[in-house]
Amino acid sequence: MVTIFHRLGQWKVEGKISPEQYSHLASLCREEPFSLFLELNVLLYAGVMAFVAGLGWTATTWAHQLGDALVLTAFSAILGSSFWYCFSRAPAWSPSETPSPTPIFAYVLYLGGLAWAAELTYLESRFHLLSKQWDLYLLTTAGLFFFLAYRFDNRLVLSLAMSSLAGWFGITISHWPYHQSATYRRCAILYSLLIGVVGALLQRRRLKPHFLGTYLNIAANVIFCALLSGVFKPEGYGVWFLGLLIACAGSLAWGLSRHQFIFVVYATIYGYIGVSSLVLGHIVTNETAVLSYFVSSAVAILVALIQIALRFGRQA
Image (tube, rainbow, N blue to C red; front, side):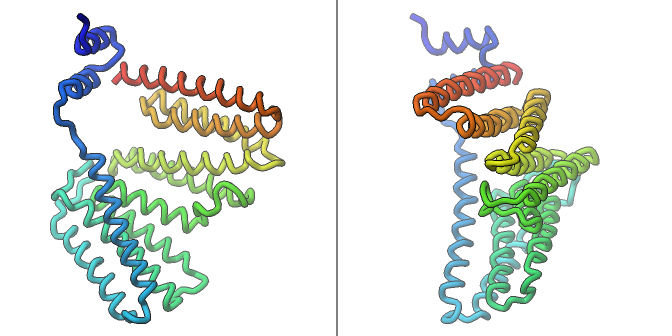
């Protein structure tokens, strides 16, 4: 009788799965304990975000009853305590990857960063210190978060820094994917190219080279969204569609050459959305044809991704 372990062994010998995949699948079949580190990590970060969001909601809702002094004192206490903890326990700075000194270090750093953002938001909403120049808050926050990310080797804080910088560029989620001007899209593309180049230059300088993936992932998503928003326009979409095809080709080539499957997924998904918008908007109008297109194209995309994923698995 052929058991699942025998099948797994055959697949490993034939090269259909890597030794690491074989070990993982075999342990699951034996019902051995497995790590929940990623899931718990996400939940803890979400808990920190929910905590700060709850504080912000309480502060804005009960500001008159609590008083500005109490609210600012609470935010400052959280901010000061978090940064004191991080600076007092962090090892000496190194340009290479540095492990977290304590199990809760990253969460405390994240809490401090969110507390800083919440306090600045409260100050501006209550006192209008910068008024029409409020975007300087975003630039200052981006600078602080970049410093914290490189000082304490934290990629999530680096993502916060790039999000703040995107806000300073005028790129906000509320504008996606409609009601954008060509200038807005060009700013988004310029931002993507900027952080991509900066990430590559810092990687070549060996300054936290493992950060490059974070830079490129954010740059890729922003530039793809910007190009798609142009493709969705009823007029003048040709240039943006050409740009989308070039971006998809570049992402696909990068993903295949560097063995980074996520960039292959970006090229496939964003390219599929762009092509589908043109097909459904300008070519296919019959409901039966639309359904046939979605079924056939979705199956083809899924099969292609599975085949590429298997190839990546064999090369792992």
